Image (cartoon, rainbow, N blue to C red):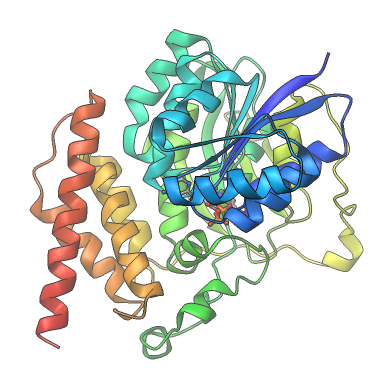
Length: 394
Ligand code: NAD
Ligand code: MG
C-alpha cells in the first residue's frame, strides 16, 4: 500500500535528499505536503516534480506568489502558510520527515508525534530543547520515532530491536558517537580566531545546510547530538563517548557488556539513514554508492579537544544541569551562529555567548512546552543583548 509523506523543510539539504529517495519508490510513497520557510521558487520546482496535495510557506506574501505560480502551471497543489498549517500537514500524513532547521521544528514535529505518525527525526534542536516532554509524547501517542541524524540512525541499527526501556536491559554500556572533527580539526587557536563563514560551511565529508555546517565546525553539532542520544536511547551523558573519526565511514557504535562493539558503516550520504527511516524494518535502494573499503584504506580515531572546541563541553554541561538548560544552550547557539554567518562576530565568540547565557539564566524543570518556549525566548533575548554589548564595545 502506498504511504503518504509530509516533508517539513523540503527545500533544504535533508528535504531534497528525502525527495530523491521517495522518487525512486513511487509504488511505496506519495508526497502529501512539502514545506519551506521562504524559498518559493525552489518549492514551486519541487511541486512540479512531486505533485503534493499541499505546499506550506511561512508568510502570506510568499504563499500568494506560490498560489499564482502554481495556477499558471496548471498544478492542483493547495497552498497554505504559517505554523498552524505546518502542524496540520505534519499530523495528516503516514510518514513525516522533520527537516526544518532549528527550534522552529519543535511545534510541527510535536504535532506529528501527537497524531501518532511515523516520525523521521532529522532535526535535532527540537529534541534537545524538549527531550523529556518529547519522549513522553512519543510513548503516549504510540508514534514511531526513527532517528535520521546519521550517528543516531547508526546507533539505532547497532542496537537490538527491543532496546526501548534503557541500554542496560539489552546489555549495552556505552554509545560511541563518532565525529568527523569538522574542517578545523587540526587548526590552532590563532587560525580559529580568523575563520570565515564560507570556510566553516565547507565541510570535508558532508554537504549540509549552513547552520549545521557551522555547528559541525564548532563541535556544537556533536554536543547537540550527545544530548539527542541521551533522550533517544535513554542513556546518561556518561554513557555517551565522543570519538573523532575523520573519515566519516563509521557513523557510530554501540559497546556491549561482553566486550562486543557493533559499528554501522557506509559512505557519508544522508540518503542511507533517510531510506532506513522510510522503510524500516525493510530496506530499500537509495542510489548511494557502495562503500569501497580499499579506497578508504584506513580508519583513524582520536579524542576530541574541548579546549579548542568548547561547545562540546558546554553541551555536556547543559545536559548535566538538566531542565531547561539544553533549550537555553540551543537558543543561544542559534543566535550566535546567525551572527557569525552575518559576519557580526568571530567564530570563537560563539561559545563565549553560549556560556554567558547558560550561566546567567536560572534553569527550571522542562516539564511543559510553556517553560521550554519561555526559556527559548529568554535565552535568545539574552544572547542578543550580549551581541549588542560586544558590538558597542567594539
Ligand atoms: P537546510 O538549511 O538545508 O534546510 C532547512 C529547511 O527548513 C529549508 O527547507 C527551510 O526553508 C526550512 N526552514 C528554515 N527555517 C524555517 C522556519 N523558521 N520555519 C519553517 N521552515 C523553515 O538544513 P538541513 O541541512 O537540511 O538541516 C535540517 C535539519 O536536519 C537540521 O536540524 C539539521 O541539524 C538536521 N540534520 C541535517 C543533516 C544534513 O546532512 N544536512 C544531518 C543530520 C541532521
Ligand atoms: Mg549527525
